[in-house]
Image (cartoon, rainbow, N blue to C red):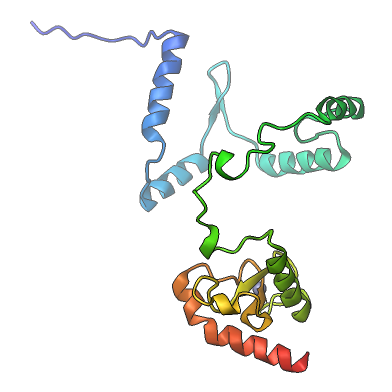
Length: 210
Ligand SMILES: [Zn+2]
């Protein structure tokens, strides 16, 4: 005789939670194949949503667009606000309470700092050094505070055309500096090397017209 056991889903809320968490964990980071994604997408488009009574219904046509419009209006009129804000009074209180109270990192510089690497800064320029600041400002000024490649005025950096570490004699030479925006600042050593002649050309042109 064969006994067929039928397991009836009888799972407590707590166990359900644990189970779902396990499923979630096993699924995160999973890579779906393109065909799988397509299938999911198609399945979702015709998807019916179960309501609390176990009946199913389809979202009416244009429902998404309608909700989107409604929400946008709510944001625009200020009915909906992002996050949670302190009142002016609360802000003042916080400000008074924290004024003059030293932060935990106050005075923890150099070897007192947890990230101190033991003075490796010889080959890297210190941004706070007055001489460096002066050099950077003169480079910016010569280039009219614009990226030499795209004329952007945002996120400017003064780049050393010939490396700071390899050419100590050119560290504060304005002709060894070029103003670049973050996007045009070379990120790799190879790129930096490749662009040396280009940068030198750009700088020499601007020096002539200056
Ligand atoms: Zn640029």
